[in-house]
Amino acid sequence: MAERSKESNLFFLLVVGLLAWVVPGAGHYVLGERRRSIIIFVTIVLTFCTGIYIGSIGVIDLAGAKPWYLAQIMNSPMVAALERLTADGTYPVYGRPNEIGQIYTSIAGLLNLLCIVNAVYLAHLRGIGARG
Amino acid sequence: MSIIATVIMATFTAPERIGTTPQSMLWLLPLVAAIAVVYKTTKVRTVKAGEFIKETAILFGSIIVFIGVTALILYTFVWLITE
Image 1 (cartoon, rainbow over the protein chains, first blue to last red):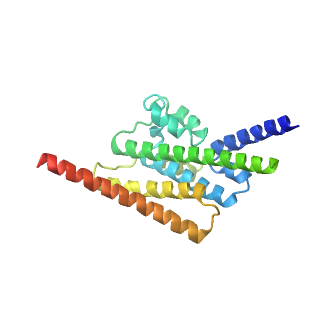
Image 2 (cartoon, helix red, strand yellow; image 1 turned 180 degrees about the vertical axis):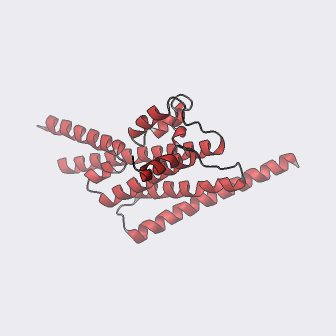
Image 3 (cartoon, rainbow over the protein chains, first blue to last red; image 1 turned 90 degrees about the vertical axis):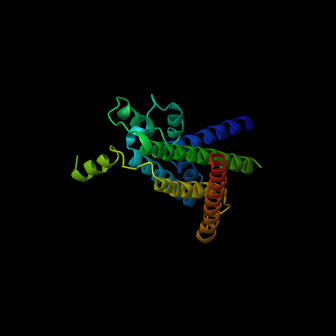
C-alpha cells in the first residue's frame, strides 16, 4: 500500500515537472497556487518574447549556439519548434541584438527551470504532508 | 493568414537596430526586473500585492546597486592600469 502511494507520488511529481516545463507556471497552477502561476507565466513569456523581439527568432540557433539553446529549451518544448524554423539560417542575426536576444531568451529559460524545481519541491512537500 | 497575424509574425523575424552604445546597457533593467519578480514569486510564503511589490523592489534595487558598484570598481581598476 505504502509502495503504491510512493509510486503515485513520484508520478505526480513527474507530471508537475513536465507541466511546468510545457507551460511556464502550469506546475504551480495544478498545485492551486494560482497567483504564483499567473505571475510566473506572464513574466517568463514576456521576457522570452522581448528576447525574440529584439534579436528575432534567429537567436534560437542549435547549430551555432548550443549552450544558449540548452538554456532556451527550458522555456518550453515550443522552442524546439521555433528552432526547426530557424535551422536553415533564414533569419540571421548578429551583433548586439543577437547578444541581448540570446541573454533574454536564455535567462527566461533558466528562470523557468527555477520554477520547475520549485513546483516539484512544493509538490514533494505536500506529498510528505499528506502521508503524515 | 490575417494582416494582423502577419504583422505580429514579422516583428519577430527581423532584429531590432541596437548599436554598441552605452545606452544599450539599459536593456539590462527589464531583465533584472524579470529576475527579481520570478525569484521572489518562488520565495515568498504568500503572494500579497503590497508585500510582494516591496520585496521585489528591494531585490531589484539591490541587484542594480551591486552591478553599479562592480562597474565602478572595474572602471577604477582599468583607469589605474591605463593612466
